Image 1: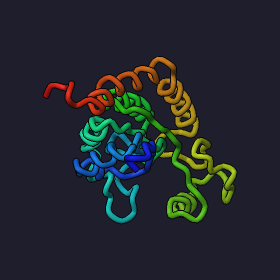
Image 2 (image 1 turned 90 degrees about the horizontal axis):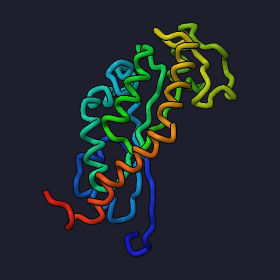
Image 3 (image 1 turned 180 degrees about the horizontal axis):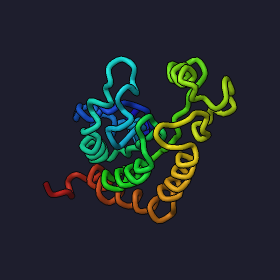
Image 4 (image 1 turned 60 degrees about the horizontal axis):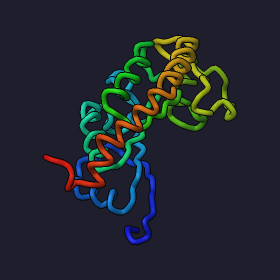
Length: 197
């Protein structure tokens, strides 16, 4: 891939940051960006999110270090967050914004927890009487609310999501994230001989 000068993007999990050799090979082969589902910048909401081992809950305190290590190789991190997880309060919107800025994420993707028909989440919410519309795939957009969040209200989740999106995707903060990445991470990764250690 190096000889073809291809640029590529992938989705991976947090563990990629633990392997410096892999990160170097990814950068050398043209990896421009990785998408990582962090899901929540706060511990609340993570317990039970993964059915078998609660891996993200056990590793959430490593998020910032992982982002720094990956981006220091010149690879952008697109951090994904799910809003409206059980236990999320309206404070989660500020927490996502602050985390995105403080961790210097290159890009941020936010979605609303979505109970897709046939999934364990869907079954759990249906059993609890928390689904707003049963079996409607057209509401599974990742941006529409089709369940009763706890402890937030539907309106708090809708309004908070909207305001967070405006803050995260505004011109000024978007330009800052890109300029910061290029200056702090990309240029040193492309020209390590110019970087003093």
